[in-house]
Amino acid sequence: IELTIDHLKSRKAFGGVLWDKQVTRHRMAWAQTNVDAARELMYRAAWLEEQGADSVRMVSEVKALAGETAKEVIDDCVQFHGGMGYIAETEVERLYRDTRIQAIGGGATEVMLEEVAKRL
Image (cartoon, rainbow, N blue to C red; front, top):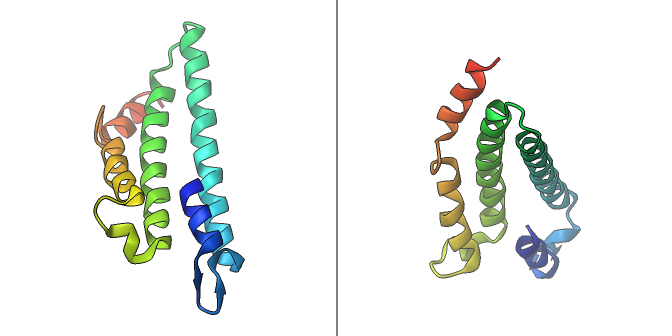
């Protein structure tokens, strides 16, 4: 998010700096809000585990939410970087590749959601 915000604050297009466009700021604010929410849920799951409580449902929720949130955020970031977002060996392109595995590795989102559903 920080990398993209820095880019948006310096990139000029469409008659001005991209960061000056309200829709751009709101998309990045929404991305940060979702990342913060996923992080707080992770802290709650860790606390439950530390207390010795059954944390499987919440850990599964965290895994599902964090992986999908990461995919959505990096999709927006790549889009905001334009063509440079897809060029191999750029940081945002590497982050895109690295992020995609989060929704697969350690249990696909669908598997995590099934674990949540079993415990509802």
